[in-house]
Length: 119
Length: 180
Image (cartoon, rainbow over all chains, first blue to last red):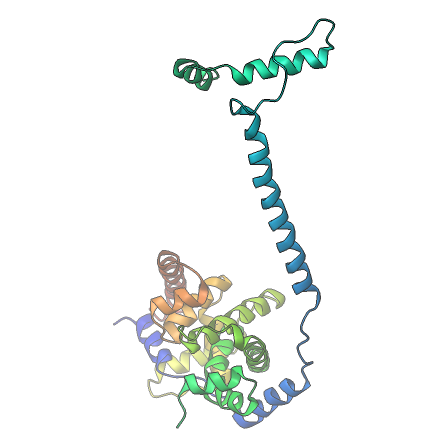
């Protein structure tokens, strides 16, 4: 064993001691008594409740939008007129175009080409 | 005699007498770490007080699956590191070398607190706070590597490398002082 290891081993075998442990304990206990009592925060549960409600509302709204958005795509659900009448406004033409798109059957090849057209 | 778990359960329900028992059992351990880290007896006593106040304030967060001593060391170590940041660099005093010399030559010597401080000042000069903490916990306090990892939050590799550097620095220092 070299000198460094010898010194370190001997140090490990010893521990410093407190000259007056009871006095230190009393000081610690006295400090505990002088500590202010813990106050339960009112704000935190309130914020937690509001945020939970907001999160629930957002999730509910998201689910609602999902159903709402998917309904016109189903064939037969479309309530729009198929052929625009003469002198129809641009809005009516656009609506009937949407209706035609809605009722059109679509092949698997087309779906596939639409899916991959941006790749 | 009550087990430590029983005492801690009582502390969690706000029993101060049970907490007094905890303080009496463990204050020496915290003092030992703090003295070796800060090399000052009064600062060390201050850390002991702060540590136990933190323990009392956070006893509800203590996870009973973890050893209590490890949790206590973790709190004390953090306080010591914070205090080291606030303190000026700890430099050896001119008389410290004589203390080391007397300890090295007398294998039966029992160290007093001021002598402990002197020896650690001499040995740990130039170590970073983290290296000093790892060295103190594993070499001077004799803790297992896994315990040091839990206390410091370092992984096994980091603990090993910090300890290696600390030991090399101390070896060089002792060589410089003609002890090697």
